[in-house]
Image 1: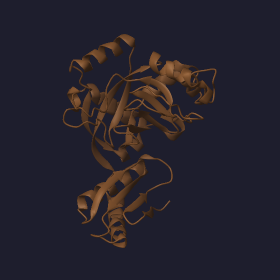
Image 2 (image 1 turned 30 degrees about the horizontal axis):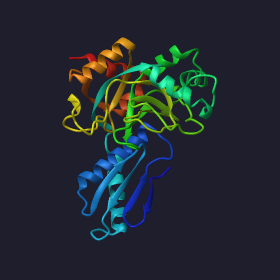
Image 3 (image 1 turned 90 degrees about the vertical axis):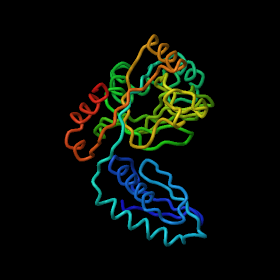
Length: 291
């Protein structure tokens, strides 16, 4: 689809690059959002990136809506010519799959689920064609995920699986949202994975929990002292399954300031990724332990 521009009142411009999620659409929207930021257009006060779109807030006393539109359209042309390469990070996130806390929660809300007799992992494995939960967990953790946006609640990352479209995990949300979701739950809805940064309501299927805080407004967590939100759009996430002992140890390490998530700076080239998805992912994952 051609890029769609929509005004929201007299202070917002919504830019939709695609009506479906893809890495190509994400790269275009990110390139355009960065272009708007770097252009320094007078009167633009905020830029909010999303999965395949972004929204601009502007001061109509400083710039007219039609002038904003004209400036952004010019940036779209430059973005389409830009190379699809970004400097980003790959991060390893430990996950305790099928943990007791998300299990207790999901069992309290079975009447809101498509299959009340099973668990979220059972359901996700079945509808995605996996023989059992172990096979599903291997698929969920076996390839990296791209953080396409951060939001909804503070610090929550939406993640898009970096595999061929026919291999992407697809799971609908609950029939009715829960009123409770444990903090740091690893969830999934539609084609997007997420990590619940805080405890609260939610509708995504629950697969496990991470011991690694990703949002800390007090900025007392050792690796969140400079900025309270861990993730940013463009990050690449690799999930690492862990057991209860490893989970408890990581929680203790976080509490004592000893936990440091494995993070590596990388260059991601969309063209090279598309040529050999499996091989490119293997190289990316190898960088986690490459010193």
